[in-house]
Length: 119
Image (cartoon, rainbow, N blue to C red; front, side):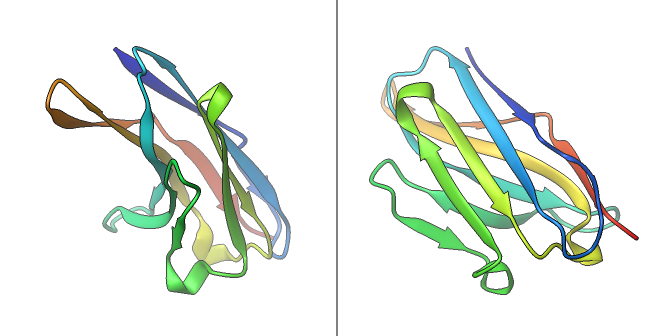
């Protein structure tokens, strides 16, 4: 099986920065997309950013320029650099990954890491 474990969340003041990490382990042939989603209380889970195996990226428009996603394929790890954080960024951030195995795409989710932006 594949497991994703996030780290790096915590409490930060508005305008501050955090870097989230997600490490994938298990039965990995080749990860395609890896990325980050977030979910605030009472709201739907939403895309933050994704990155493909070819390093193409997609960001939520409202986050472009503040957040940067990157990956280290040899370590099956994805990062999210979060700058100029705002209170509305407060959410649980979930790591996402997928790969193609046995004729289908399999999707994986981490347990989430809490990010709280508050003064």
